Image (cartoon, rainbow, N blue to C red; front, side, top):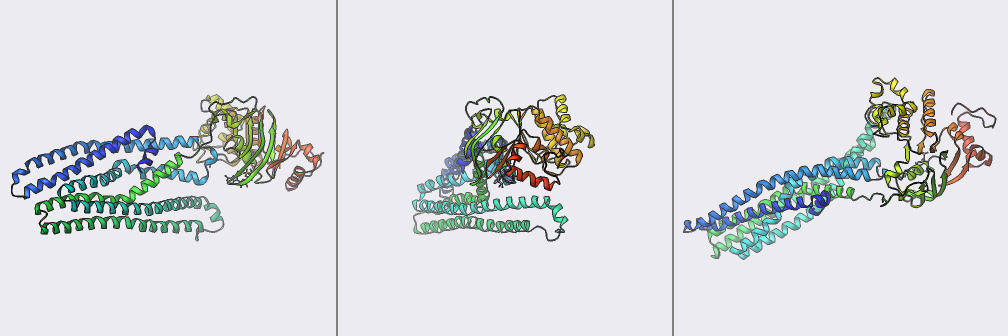
Length: 582
Ligand SMILES: Nc1ncnc2c1ncn2[C@@H]1O[C@H](COP(=O)(O)OP(=O)(O)OP(=O)(O)O)[C@@H](O)[C@H]1O
């Protein structure tokens, strides 16, 4: 566990942790020595010549004074390390989060991350403050008490050593079962927390279907599982608490019995027995405390393991020297990619020419969003190469790649700030004029006019006070402000009212400009207007060409177009006037 604590704190704090352990060990040793000195002091005091106890009493007083002198700074340093730990663990988790590839952030992991940064960090806090100290006490005390006893009677020393060994074995066994139960409970708690959030989010749907009384089966199951996990945790903890307590008490009784026998046998004086029993009591004390705090220590151990697992998560490799892109075209060359072994792209090769608009179309689940994520290097392909400006994206540092690319997702996340704050995310050092200009071009001004508070109106958590089309316009304004030569855009599929639709189309047109645009296109108008259309099917670029070329080829695209046009009430003849929108 101590190694895990060193790992979690990082090498820069290794020295401080070693010093803290040094202070705790010194305090435990001095306290142990003081208890050991009690034996000769009591022996002399209870013997025939109490005045011979003086040197021992002075030595005892000195040992206690030394203990007090060490104990005070040890306690202070423990609390200071606790504060450092809290700050630095949050800092290290934050740094790691900033390095993890965007694809890492699935809903489950984000939920787990919240728990890790709050509850699990607090679980660890108790370690330097007091838990570590109990552990050090429990290890150092037998190391002092057993040899000290050996000076008086080897049989009592051997019995105490056997008791110490039994304690260590029971502690180890109890640790394992408690840790397994804690890991299980942690997983179940995380699941229950996720289900509660899901239940809250699903309220509109559940109410719409009159499902308010019977609730939500998944949540009920999760709560039952949580209850069961609590019981398992209690049962797993019991052997540790009861077993350790029992062994400690049994050891004390055994020593008492053995001591009495030795006194009756005449090989030990009564005064020595009393003194040795004081020492035995001292041996029992930290073991009892360990039994009480064992649960917290094991939970902290699990928390440390989880935090170290996060800190050890592999990030995408970054090159030592970043290669400069030449131009702004994008190319995928024989790219293969799958999620958890399920293939999505099977040797996709396609080119997105510089300064042109390429529409990516294909059935749902064909891998269109995956293509965008590969170009933005949310993850690396299993095989093949993604090039931006002729350079493999793996040969560019992330900040250099992202300085070339803006991504506008369909599902736009807005921060719980004002409209302006959210646009400024595109380029935090932009002037107010630049922010307003980008926002106006993306037709965000209309949104500001609509909301009370104008530009400073809060958008709500995640942008909940705005419609899907409005959120995407803000995202386009961010991209305009960032002003990169390449834009990757997932067109909104949501049905928009005519005003919103028109505003969004204008915003997209402004963003396209002279830029290289790869757009997952859903609207017939956007697809038709693109300079090039790539049809993704079966994990490859099944067809590539202009709207006319692909219609003439009468393949996937022509079929897709016919179906979509029928659904939208269009007729497919070349002489049709261009419709307003689907
Ligand atoms: N994070 C993920 N983990 C596992 N599978 C995923 C993940 N993301 C996508 N997939 C799967 O990969 C396939 C391609 O997904 P992708 O989102 O790229 O398709 P798409 O063409 O953009 O679909 P749509 O048009 O419906 O958005 C789908 O079968 C999807 O279920």
